[in-house]
Length: 169
Image 1: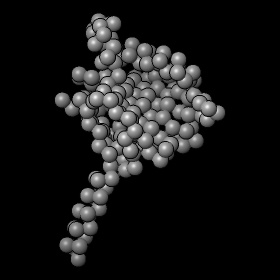
Image 2 (image 1 turned 60 degrees about the vertical axis):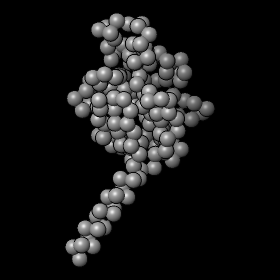
Image 3 (image 1 turned 30 degrees about the horizontal axis):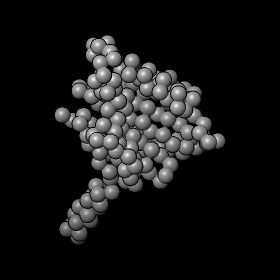
Image 4 (image 1 turned 90 degrees about the vertical axis):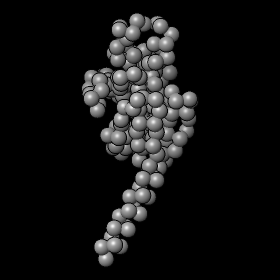
């Protein structure tokens, strides 16, 4: 009987592991819950994943391109500046309404900033939760978006992704 229980536990944990989507790129590693499919990737700088055609989670090495263009001295380019640049871009695209103003936080010992805004696109209300993480070498943007009516369930998915977040070398 004990052998059967052990075998069942090994098989079920193996199935759970295979059902998850792992994403790793220069700078971060995360595990997405079962059901996420890759929708878009560009080099190792950007990737997005969708589940049930309703929730999208994307990852981007957010501010490195701006730093590469030397538009700011590196010591003046804070996470606040990066977040403001992205807000201006989002404002131009989505005409959003901030629900939670960007706030400072710490995720896995890394400085982070997060905020939430809502936008109406083609008569449908969407939420956007954006987290910008300042790693040792890269600045990562994690964006979760979906239909406003599914936000509560989607936030639980996002929490599990954030809990799996690791900074890699």
